[in-house]
Image 1 (tube, helix red, strand yellow):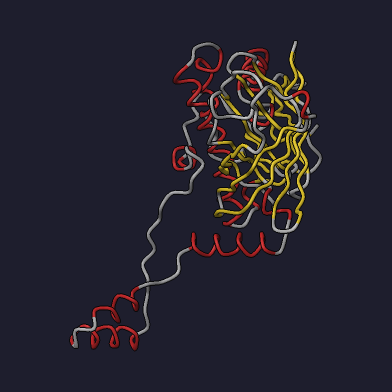
Image 2 (cartoon, rainbow, N blue to C red):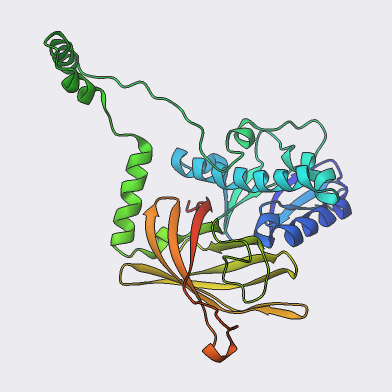
Length: 321
């Protein structure tokens, strides 16, 4: 356990504990772990604690890593906000407190994940990065392109001569997104396991008529979070009629495919059977998988076919300070 921050004012730690427990149950323990827990300190104030061993303040990160940290934390807050808007209960009443964050000394990397401390205190506003990364996507910042004088003269000459194609090509410059995509493709071709790190949410074949569940059940949530090394993580699952469960995940490359294995996921009265996903790269934020249930043919329902497709969308990039 690490103490990230100590405040002089006391906070209702019991109410905070109930809020984080509700987030863990409704979304996932990984969502709740992004928020430090307020614990009464010896001097009557509040210690903000988080599970972990290694801690790095956000102020110590380079700009690229800090942006990934903002994206990760922002996407978690976005998930919670969406639940708060559509459902009642503790999460709705506590959502504003989670977004009320001090301007400084409040955001950390703890064992590879973002952790927010000091949240929910009176007088704190909503930092700009929360809204800017609300959907887990970086804001679009057009950058002016400076061209050397020789290039400008060439473009002007081409325009005078009617060579519109030439001037159009001269104006084209590589963008950061294209560079990231190229790096992701190279990492996939090199079978670097870190390319599948982060959190991935299933986006297709979620209704019972199309999915791989052996009973008639829609998916409400299917999400895996894989550690920075790209080798192990956990599954968060919710089925419409059966409820929630969590299980372990492993990942490795076999040839040009990333093979993701989800262990059995147990809950009261039912078990979500193990799966094997064989996935291929689509772009930096999507992988296309073919899903097989790990079960003997004799246990499959009549006319059940193996090999369901599942498109996985990245929702939380890995944080590697």
